Length: 224
Image 1 (spheres, rainbow, N blue to C red):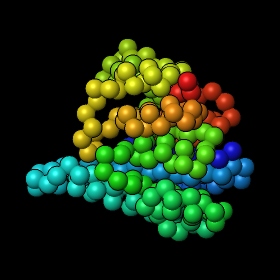
Image 2: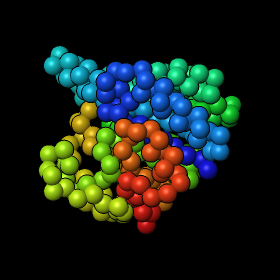
Image 3: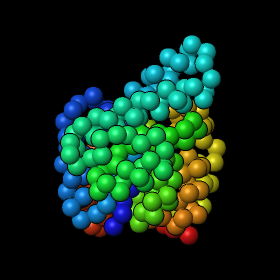
Image 4: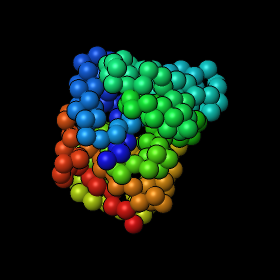
């Protein structure tokens, strides 16, 4: 299959630990043996910290987004470093470059692309652009819940959810730089129109990527 993987910054850069990058690199190499894999990496708290500094300086939300995008691209460079010769050595800045780089047979790793697009949106657009059959979203919880499981012990996880249900859930979310939660409206809309099979998993264990290919795990976004 052709697979796009989005790895949340809340996972890969959470503890600023090189071993997390190495662990992801090992699993991605394993996946690459049987599949074509493209990866999008988020910025996490590191990006939000920089964005808060920029916002404190009174800059625009667009520039705050640009600064966050720079951090995602740094994270992408670290993952490329961990992947060594298995990855294309440059971080694409747009989807055309990502497609071009993928022709090399190397794994493509990218960060953000432009203001107002979360890396989840970038992942869904990339999946549509390259004709991916599966989009895997590695985040900090086990799947999509009806409310924040870190705050509410009675939160219930969805095993399956439609894009229309997700749009209803997230239509009131704040879309300022650095405040995205799971998916923004752009990401959901792309998944809906392209009918891309999408699975949300807990990315704390990189091997959950393999489980998302092999069987049932996390939350599946059902194409409509």
